[in-house]
Length: 126
Image 1 (cartoon, rainbow, N blue to C red):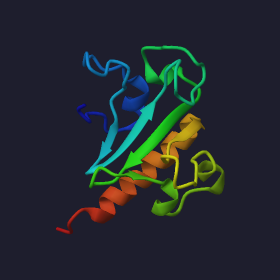
Image 2: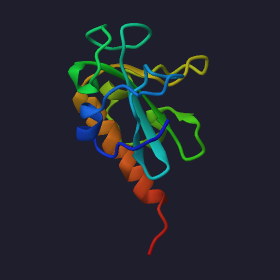
Image 3: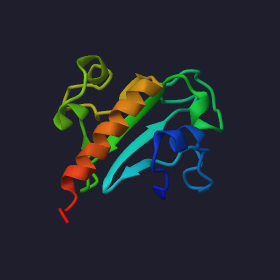
Image 4: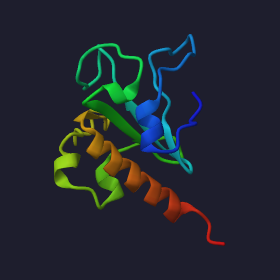
């Protein structure tokens, strides 16, 4: 899936993908090689309302995951600088993927800002 969303405002306005293989996915937010995927649907997502809506911003609560430049899922605690209340939405056990559930849009903005900082720190200096 293309990562063509670069801001939380664009993410909130995002519509479900039109890829017939994965039509249930919304585009992800890309910051350099870091990716923040925010998803919601009526099945299997920690979202509210638990319905199939076409625009991501129509959800009050969403699910999120972060991928590093290598494509691995990363627990947000490894990024540092995030509030404990936000980190609590992500499982901390090794047997569960680090998917945050029931996140509000303020949480998404906080994650997006930290992912952008990580991308900026990884960018080569001019």
